[in-house]
Image 1: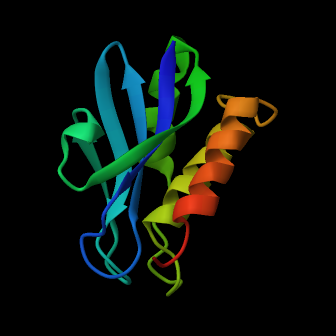
Image 2: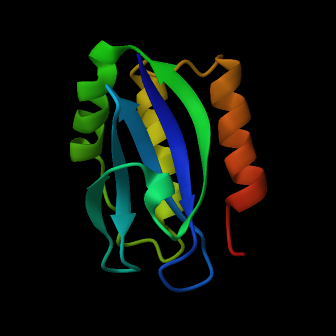
Image 3: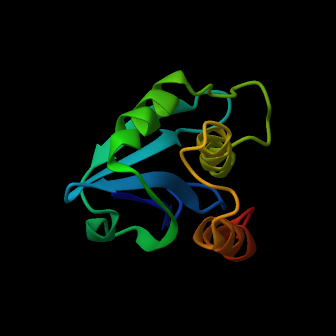
Length: 130
């Protein structure tokens, strides 16, 4: 199995906490994210446990997925759009959109209690400006 987390970090700049979608698979961590600011966001990945980053605040568990779906998470990231048109769009929206794609492809089960609890916790505690 592989685990998905929403990794939350202190902002690089600005007043929004930074979010990434972290996958732990076979003891390795990959965080999928967008970096930058409007209108110059770019997709990026980081290897390594997010908790080793001094800016890391917490990781919120959202799903346990089949090991065979780990490559589909990477493909979903590769196929994801970066919205450099919408002024209010940011890294938090990117993670929520990635989760929606994974749900639509039935990689993540929207009826899974962990998914809804984790997603809602991130929204309640960390979504929007600080």
